[in-house]
Amino acid sequence: MRQWRTMSISLQEGIGNLEAALREEGELVLRSLRGSINALANNDVELADEVIAFDDDVDRAFFGMQEGVHTLLARQTPVAIDLRHVLAMLHVNLHLERMADYCVTIAKLTKLSAELSAHDELLAGFEEVGSRAEEMIRVALDSFLARDLEGAERLMDLDELIDNANRRIIGNVLAIGGDEALREWGMRMIVVSRCFERIGDHAVDIGEQTYYYVTGEFREFTDASHPEGNIPA
Image (cartoon, rainbow, N blue to C red):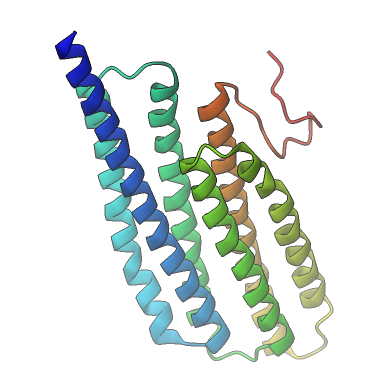
């Protein structure tokens, strides 16, 4: 009995360490996202370069998290909700790393567009959509770490706001007139807008992992083929 109890404490401590590492990685991703938003808004090439270089820090956190999970699984034998928790953290770790990759893409497009004409109204729209993406990352991580199903489900409504903003941005780009440089800038901004939209999608995916971790059932929050979101048995 004493040996089992020691192993149980060790397992819970290991899970706690992984949760802390996941939180730290999330803060790195938020830093990268805010940097990419500011670089875009201010046409700041130096800041864009910093965002690109900073991705190495996110990657180190990602690989450290992967190694931590593998070590825990090798040394312990989590079952039931503990096993789901650890496996869900693997998925959340991947989603965070992908979010950071989209921040790098935004930074690279900012550099490529630095000499082109920009549309001030569209840039203001990116501040809005970027702030919504930040909110979604925070809600996704907070709800996962707190086992908060209500918070996880809230991500669907937040994602719809980003989707609507993405559609508005695309519509505004398509409405740009005959300025060739401005049109070229606008086409690149469609890709930027898509990056923000995909960051929101990854936040929703974290919400799905929260649902799986807490309930033991997998639910797709935005599965158009099944309106209720549940995967048929």
